[in-house]
Length: 440
Image (cartoon, rainbow, N blue to C red; front, side):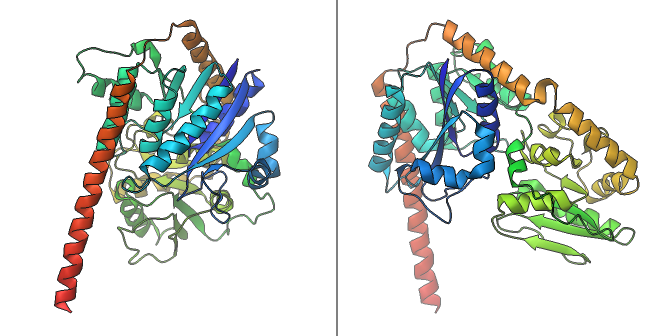
């Protein structure tokens, strides 16, 4: 079987999947798609050596991947493709042109299946337009935002998948349920439930390629409690800070919050902390995890998260909110602790369970290693389930796709909406600038 995996950004899960499918005997070509404005996948990046639009030179790709990642990928043929920035009011024709080039390249190779993972709203639409006659499977990492709402482009994307009857893979039951709930607005089901499958993703093994075994362990006099990732309000970092305030007089806690984004919290009265408010490199993420005692995730909403699978790669426990997404991957008191009451006091009590008993932390490390080496979270099992889904789609007669004109209008409506949003934003910005000038 010859398969093209076309992945937007999320190489943490895509690279292990491609590797284990290849080990199963599947001929895999992996295409990593990155926008011109942000050439980073959290596994490898070109931010310091930005590439022009189109395919990246193979030698540059291998150098950027590095020896360890290349060896990990094995026989997987990996290509990186840069598409233009996602500025709807400036790059429509350019984006369409590069989507055509990518589709033409892929279609020439006559893959039995094209597996698209994640999406970029506009470029994804253009690419789908040019491969509308090919057999396609889509993986949705998120059906809605973490706050369980959806943007206009996001809804257009779901509408198109439903109209095309595209088989979809979800990574959590929560995401699958959200999609089915959204689908109810249509008079006909369009997609058979059997073609909406939930297949987990496993540990983010690629981070092991950045591990420095000679790194110094955490200071024995301090207990490093870590929170990392993009800084947005739904991640509840203020609850973690409140919990540390409660515990810091009893334990020598050093709090580390790392990630880019606008802070919505302060560190008043925290005795020992480090706030790394910028992009965190792969090497830094690994170093922070290896030196921490635990990772705490006091999210107020989440359909899923890749953070536990990154942390579990190093067999460290996670304390997280008992909400959809987390409770599907964290076993309470076995691989981590789930907190029901989303308050600083409740998180302090849960954190203290690990601080007061090293045996529990040691046992959790062993449980994590066992759980993710076999069963539904192991990559060999995941690859097997994915291969079954591939075979099922190859056995199914491919349904007629939407007419070309229908898909064209899907893209046109999305583009016009985005232009209107940009024009409104530009108009209000001009008014604000005029007002500021008058004041001065």
